[in-house]
Amino acid sequence: MTEAPSTTPKVESSEENSSEEETFKILVTHPEVPQEALDLMSRGCKLIMCESLPPNRTEILQKAKGVHGMFWGSHIPLDKEVLDVAGPQLKSISTMSAGIDYVDVEELKKRKIPLGHTPIVLSDAVADLAMGLMLSAARRFHEGRTKIDSSTWENYHIEWMWGQDIRDSTVGFFGFGSIGQAIAKRLKGFDIERVLYTTRRPIDKKLEKQFNAQKVEFHELLAQSDFLFIAAPLTPETEGIFNSTAFPKMKKTAVLINIARGPIVNQDDLYTALKTNQIFSAGIDVMYPEPLPANDKLLTLPNIVITPHIGSATKRTRTDMATIAAHNVLRGLVGEPMLSPAY
Ligand SMILES: O=C(O)C(=O)CO
Image 1 (spheres, rainbow, N blue to C red):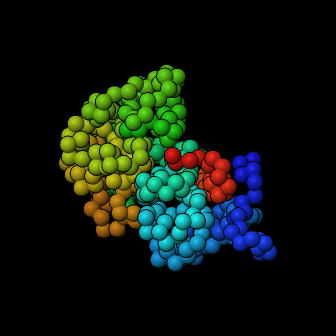
Image 2 (image 1 turned 90 degrees about the vertical axis):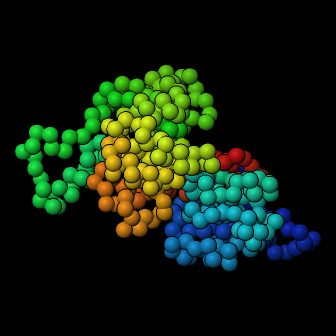
Image 3 (image 1 turned 90 degrees about the horizontal axis):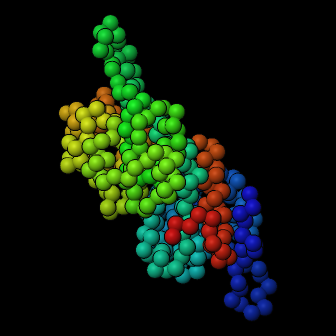
């Protein structure tokens, strides 16, 4: 990779004639950050490693004082308290995630601290998982497994375990950024009829053409989609938007897939929609809370496939995310533009 900053990160010493060369200190908030990223950062900087698993806020707060950079390796809230504890010398932060809903972005902007994150590089892995959820929810993988376990395998019925066809379907995207487009690319082999989408930001006309995609209003997306992917960030506008008002507008045969953030869907309302067959099924990789308690009522339903937030969980993807986050932090320290700035 050639993304290292053009100068070696060094603190400008405030002491005249200081003989001791000071180096930047970077707080690494997760003990399992891939070695490639640690090697990059430790070349010119001193790493302050957090050791707790699961990562814990108390340890982060204990170790944050006086650091210049933060490699934020978990989804623990990154807020005013953390920034206050760290102090005014803090000049660069990167998350190791695409979503930054757990970061107080306004507070960071106010303090003029650059923030990096790691979108794009995970889009393929997340899209692969989304395809898996789509197929397994459409064709009832989870329910099928329970039929085997309970010796109720009854395929002598012609209509037993009928699922939904993907060919000739209308696929909707709530959010059509990098992840949505990676899913649409994969769908090209499935002979779907058309793609509908909603987005905050307009997308390139060339992309619309490439995916035969059409921008629609949210209510049309709900009414027309046979498969509906949620691939948008969690914001005050998207929180809870899939709720008891939205589900009755969807087709009874619709399959909902969420690989973005749990709270975009009102989970109680999703439970009711699945239980009462307002929609056919769902496949979700994200939910709330995470981890989902083993006694959560969603887990009692036959028509939902649930994975434990593993969208980006492959060795290559997580290593790339960590490496990009490390470059972001290093670049922020020397005042260079980050590889993938969040703003
Ligand atoms: O990077 C993120 O935001 C994720 O949730 C990865 O799955």
